Length: 119
Image 1 (cartoon, rainbow, N blue to C red):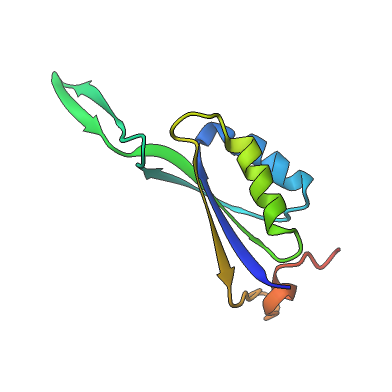
Image 2 (cartoon, rainbow, N blue to C red; image 1 turned 45 degrees about the vertical axis):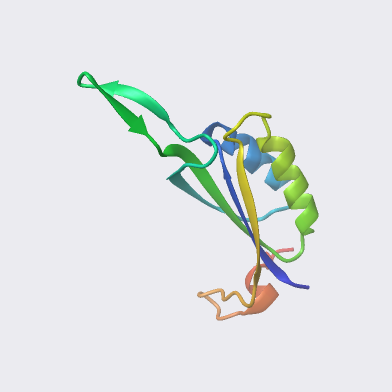
């Protein structure tokens, strides 16, 4: 098996539904970060103290998932289904191959560092 990292950058309001959907397909863990970014949305303009100000960075969440047992396509299809609204700003998904992973507590490496020892 190979180790894959998937980064999902999407709307903050999609986080709870995404967490539930990943749990339903046996994704055991994830890291979530609040981030700001811009893409096709280009931000928006606001009035601050009487002056127009460009707000170029839009709040998003970045969900990082590392898998080796759950098929990558299953994670991608689930994320696309949950996060898609059809509007600009739905986000992006990035997929990386990882060379190794290490569980700091035990020193385990590779797939055994990622797999839930209870399963």
